[in-house]
Each structure stands twice: as C-alpha cells, then as structure tokens.
Image 1 (cartoon, rainbow, N blue to C red):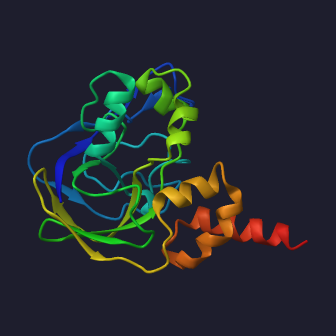
Image 2 (cartoon, one colour):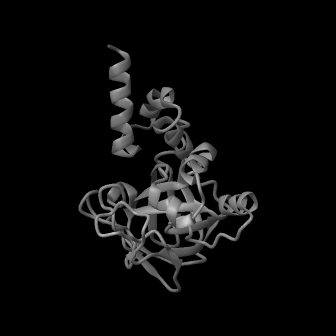
Length: 222
C-alpha cells in the first residue's frame, strides 16, 4: 500500500461553484517533493491540512475532521472504464491518491501511517456537490457518484509531518465496529435507516455525522 501522488490545488474562478467569489480549489494536481500535513483548525475558519492546498468553501470543506481527502486509484480506474475517459490523480479533488488500499471500505477511526511520521484517522465519506459535478463535466454526476457510494474518505491528522508520492501506507489500527466510510456515506444520504449503526463508531466519527445519527434516533423515539 502506498501513495501514488500527493495533490494540491489553488483557487481559481469557475462558473459552477456556489462560492460567493466564484472560486474553487477542487482542481488538485500532483506535486513533487515533500508536503507538510497538519491539523488545520476548526471547520468554518480553517481549510486544508496540506501546505499549499487551497479550500475556498470553508462552510462545507476543510477543518480538522476533513483535513485530508483520500481516494483510491482502483476506484478512479473503475470510473475510467465506466465513463470512457482518462482520470488523472487528483481529479476528484483528492489530496492523496492511494494504491492497494480500500479507502471507501476503511473503518471510521481506522488509523494510517503514511511515510515515517504522519498518522491520519478516517472520519467519514465524501458528499458530492455541484462544484464536483461541474469540475468533472459529467451530467447527473452527483446522483451517479452517490449511487455507487465509492466515496473515498476524509481524514483527520493525528500526528503531523511530511508526506510525498511513493510513501508507504500502513494500517496501524482497525476498530471492530464495522462502520466503514461507505456505510457512513449511505447512512447520511440515501439509507438513513442506517444512521443508528453509526453510533458504534463513537467520537471517531465526523461530528456532523454523529449529530445526524443522534437526531435521527431522537426523532424515531417520539
């Protein structure tokens, strides 16, 4: 298991984002050399966990619980076959493109060591948005991506440090609850009856997903 690329993006104007300034940093490109990874701070005020990477929509992206977005090259290859087009590393807006790792099947709370120093922890799947659809230029993309539920994973930074393309990825810890990033995604989008099962992941879960699960359970109890 390894990193195929580390990808960062700069703000640029596009016609398909809801950001008030019309800017997005979703167009991530692979970079050479080491990239510093650290916890950026609270969502809403802080952006990416990667140095040199821009997050424009701070309301929905970035922050400590979404510091790094990972996507598997295997899933990009699957989409290439389905869409009939080439998909470069970083084109899904992911910060790290992995090889040999089941990212969507990773467990909430699962910890990865990348390279000699960095430790990341899985928090949730990725919700597709209008900007993602516009960036790819695929009609109905949000619905299509949601249906497949190969979401990749958001991660928080447990131990900061530098990463680079070619770094080995080691799974340090896998919880026993069975709640994957893909399950969390399905529970918070199309299969809300799964929400109570998310509680097994506890505080390792993204706070917004945890709040949604608790709200659902309270509503069902009325």
